[in-house]
Image (cartoon, helix red, strand yellow):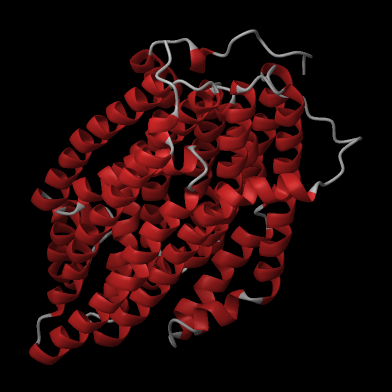
Length: 459
């Protein structure tokens, strides 16, 4: 990498609407490609059998936690690095980047151990169907043991995002997803690897994307210089990264616990049993087309807000937050319309049986009706992470998913089992989203009063 940082980063001078498009559009596109991969991956797995699709669906809590550890660490690096650049502190920016790479390696080591020793226990805790457990072990063991590609890709992408080079993350994420899509049918059907073939295709795509991300950082990212030879871990920097990152990791971990609990509730109380858990898994695949672009925008907003906080420019911070809320709200309305009007067509993508269609249509309609509430929470949550208040996002996630959603689903699931109305369990989602929005608005008002309002107006 070249030495020295430019005099002024675009995040401090480019007009905010143009900057948001410049920063977020590449990530939105790459997230849509990722969403397409999620659909295609499950599309091919569904052609093996419904049990194999169930196994992949039940892998979601562990897979989601792995991604959460990677992205949570990267969120801390992203926010701190952008702030350091806004403060013109080049040495600190380099130190933060080096520690981010080190922590990504530590995260991989943890999931390698889980992949080697914990996968079968994880599946057996969810279902007693041996065929599903066997498919699940084949799939998740490969995903975890070769997850160094995932951890490396996410960290090096966030180094580019932190310095405003989001276009390159579109290349890395796009490459990984396209390779995955191409190799899925090859490994599943041509090489007769079945569910394991889907996992092999996934990790190959991640490893190649990781390699491209390293190359682009080395050749294009002039704002950060990595020096592995002289690197020594510093507890102070690790603590600062995880002060922001741990709440994000816990937030994802809460989501994994929620998914695990929901799968158990559905298998025990829903009339469709394992098929209901499969419907829940399909919902997460389908909603990625709605939520992934929102997360792409969110990833573009975080460095903008963080940089201008470091540069002490409240006007630009607030403008970025307002535009993100407006865009997300409009987009989520469109997503809700699709889920509520054509749920059967969405389910049919996955070779849905008549039972899956019968119970899946009302599920998608009920959950889809909550999208706009969830979108506002995500948009405002970007300011929590950017300003170092990731614990606020953790509080919202904890309240929504564990304190409200799971208990409500348990009670409604039992009530539905008693009166023969399994659809009742899905109404836990609207209940949880209303509460989540109320908590988010309250915490944002506190953040505004205590932090944002104290920042100078700026030019």
